[in-house]
Image 1 (cartoon, rainbow, N blue to C red):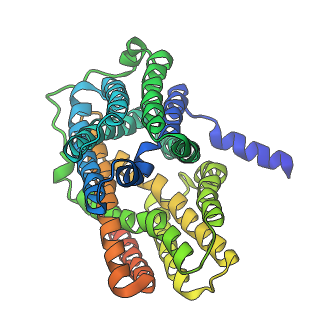
Image 2 (cartoon, one colour; image 1 turned 30 degrees about the horizontal axis):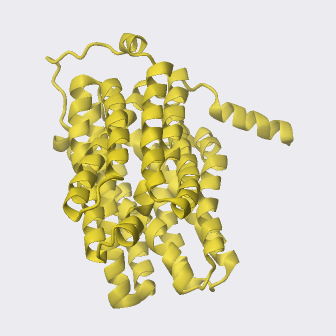
Image 3 (cartoon, rainbow, N blue to C red; image 1 turned 30 degrees about the vertical axis):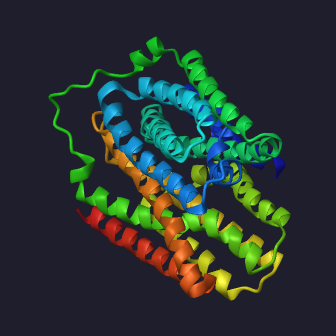
Length: 401
């Protein structure tokens, strides 16, 4: 049994390109320093003495900057290539994180946050395009799962380290976040020298007609459904911990354990799961099942008793929903691209998640205020079912066309 398990994990991680691993390492370093954004609202209120409305406005501007950065980043990726944009985004983001720590007025903080988010988030389309470039049809889903593994591990490290540093001095957050961005950029330059990367990229023929992501009707429907799914998923990260504290009266320590459980499961299970599933059936089937499973998880919050066992069970269900759906969502958008338009497709996908990140807390807090947590979980369950049915309809349309 032990030998079989070892071989299973070995197979799950084998066959990926060397550059896919390098991109994973760069992402891990970058995300391990992610600590300013999770603590930015608290910093604005407690350290800069802004009002809650002002702090909320700054976070909204971060979302607007992310949307704009993803859009422009996609355009630039298709024009100048994924390599230069990744390096530029990491270096500029690193410097801007440090600069943000010196800003103390509402106006300068608002402008600084927007510009930082714009530069920082332009990295996403370029990075997604790079992952797609260095993966094959046989391992593209696993390549993105490897990247997700780095992101989740990095978030766990960054969150824990950020909480520790914030207890000492909030300004340390800006320095560490900025320096890890710069270190990630330097590491990218060392591990993947520009000259070697350029040799792997065929010169884009501008004369080749390509489909714009904004004119691909199937893809636009996919993006709408992805946004609905993301709006529900972000409630798992934003409102569910609040629910566990206020309604189920769990301690912060246990809530932290539940959030860590999500990351640990992804780190341990996702690559093996994707390895076993990839290529066996159409990836949209797994997306449909994953989104539907998430619907069950949200509704169970209204059905199961307020116990720790129930909470663990629900977190496991929602985590498996994430692991089934998100990797194959990445595979779907890649399958519709060419080297000439991949940045634009990646940008639109990133923008859908950025939009959901802005909308989710606003809608979630208002539903809770007017109808309570129970209404929120029923709504999320219903929206997830609608999204799952939408993917099924899209799947039937694509296989018949």
